[in-house]
Amino acid sequence: MYFKTIFFFLFLFILKSNSQNLDSIFISKKEIVKSIKTDEKKALFLYECGEYFYSKNSNKAEYFYREALALNKGKNNLMEGRALFKLGFVEKNEGNLSTSLRYFNKAKDIFKDKNDIERLASVYFDIGYVYRYKNQMDKEFEFYKKGLKLSEGGSETLIGKGYLHLGNYYTRLKKLDSSIYFYNKALYLFKKIKKENRVYNVYNNIANTYYKRGRYAEVINIRSLVLKYAKKENKKLLITVSYHNIAAAYSELDEYDKAEKYLDSAIVVAEEENFKLRLAKSYSSISKVNYSLKNYKAAYLYQQKHKIYSDSIIKSQLTNTLEETELENKHKVETKNLQILNQEEVFEKRLYLIIIFVFLLLGIPLVVLLYRNSVNKNKIIQGNLEKEKIKKEVLQQKFKRSETDIRSLVADNSMRLEFLKQLLLKLKNQRESTDSVEVKNYIKDLSFKIQQQITTDSKLTLLKNKIDIINDGFDNMLVTTYKELTKTEREVCSLLRLNLSVKEIASIRNSSSDAIKVTRYRIRKKMNVPKGEKLEMFIQKLEV
Image 1: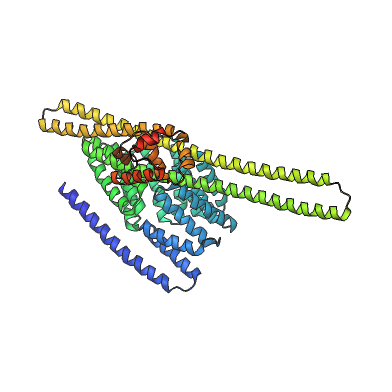
Image 2: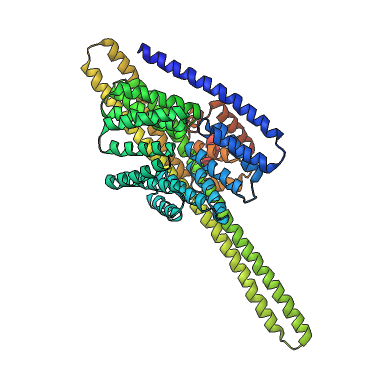
């Protein structure tokens, strides 16, 4: 234990020293940017700075990529595409998959427009990789095939990358012979062209296949080589992934102390770089390890941390997905509006020609003119109806997406409830089997805290279902009748309609009781609630 503590603090010291060095380099590069005169050279330098920091510090890399993008935004040039491409990687590493996909798709359109086949193939592979994390395997495989088709006869690095992705794909399908076949093809190409980083990437994935076959000792040997390479190159994401994967192999071998040590190191690096996806995975794994070691309190605390990061990722994905849907449907509405305007312009031109023709000939019956005018008006009306139909479809899609994601959150909460219930049962059995009064009292105290958490989570699950039912039509009524209410104030009204206390509302909204009290005061004022009447009673009397 003593040596473990010394190693941990030594590791932190090294990371801190390295971070200070990176900070000084970051500041010096920002100063150099100011001295560059042309935007073109400045953008190139910013991009190269992003490349330098990419494997060392993702936040600093993101800063330079965004600055490069800002100088090229809307120019539809290769530098804009390259900056978008790299920002897609940054967002993917942070767990923002929908945002990552949006950046990749914008980069894809630019590469296609510029006929940059190599980068286009590469972005196809990475779009497929994002769909992997979204568990959309059909789309994942579709983009891998597109990338390989474009790569034929081209860069061996790119072809090797395609083989590597296919190996991963077949590993998840549990077609392990096929996955090893593609990994070996990728390994041959990368060794041939001496791409060291790619070689270790393949080793990492071969270890993953061995893991699925239960060859854990070989997994540890291979991943230890990858970890050594990652440290040498200071690749932070690969370092934290390698620590996590070595810990997983030790867990399978029931060597939980070693597994815990490697997971601690994975968490240190992931927290430094704000890798939310990796933090969620590592906290979940270390919770299970501590549970196996019968460190139940630590297991519970780590599970709570996993919940925080997991919910954060789900919330981020939900927000990004809704924004993406809104943008997509807004584009559809705007396109339809342009079509309607074009129809109106065509109609006006035709109308002017008819009027001139009437005045010239003086013989065309007026009824013909009125008939044509009526037909064109009907087209405009039909166009407006279609426009309203699209708006309704937009609202329905947003509702369906929200409903799906809320169900996902409820399901996730149910899984956590089941885990806590099983943990509580184990603790009760442990309490009955021990003779130590001190241990019994400790387990009793921990059991009480877990029971409280179960009660709270159960209540939250029921509340989420009730809120969905009550909010059906209630929010629309508030928007129509009390237009001054904000979205937050309307949501608090829905919870007050359930007769919830200030403390309960604060818990559900992850806010403070004081903030909810202030919101209640604003609602009373905007709704002109009489002084002698309770706000809850006033809201509950409202007719939907």
